[in-house]
Length: 188
Ligand SMILES: Cc1cc2nc3c(=O)[nH]c(=O)nc-3n(C[C@H](O)[C@H](O)[C@H](O)COP(=O)(O)O)c2cc1C
Image 1 (cartoon, rainbow, N blue to C red):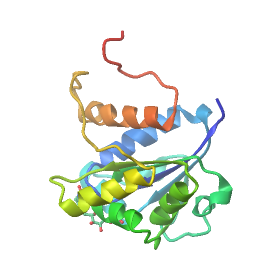
Image 2: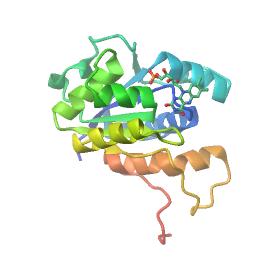
Image 3: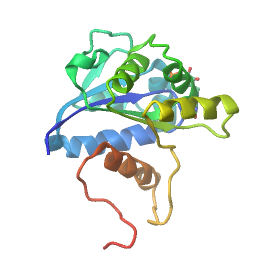
Image 4: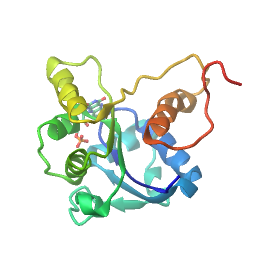
C-alpha cells in the first residue's frame, strides 16, 4: 500500500475530542503517511479550548497551515493529496464547500479534492439538521464526497468519552483506507 498524503481540517463544530482522537491515531499510524497537513479554523481552536480545556493541538508533530494560507500544497490539485478529512465539520464549512465558496484553505482544499475526484470525508456535526444542511450534504455526496456524520455507536460498549469518539474516528480511518486494528462487530 502506498503512503498517504492527507489533509485534516478541523472546524468549529462541537466535538473537538473527535479531532484529538484522530490526531492521536494518525500519530500512531505515521508509517502509513507520507504527509499530514492540518488546518484549523479560528472557531475550531476556540471550541477545542472550551471543550477540552487546553490548546494541545499545538503539541502534535504534524504540519499546521494557517487557514488563509493558499500557498499550502493541498490548495492545488498538483500536490496530489489523496484524502481530506474534515472532523468535525460545521454547517458553515459544509455550506461553503457545497456552494464552491473557496474563501479559506479548508473550503479550497475540499474544492480541490472534489474536482480531482479524490476522497473527501466530511464528519458533519449538528443536531437537528435544517433542510439547508441536508441539501448541502446531498450536493457534496453527489459531487463524490462522503458524508460521515459524527454519530457514535455503542455496541462496542465504550466507557470513556474518548472511546465513544473512537467509534466514529475508526470508521473514518477505515473510509480513508488506513490499515488499523479496531473493534469489529462479531470479530474477536
Ligand atoms: C462551543 C461551540 C459549539 C459549536 N457547535 C457547532 C456545531 O456542532 N455545529 C455547527 O455547525 N456549528 C457549531 N458552532 C458554530 C460554528 O463554530 C460557527 O458557525 C463557525 O462560524 C463555523 O465556522 P468554521 O466552519 O470556519 O469553523 C459552535 C460554536 C461554538 C462556540
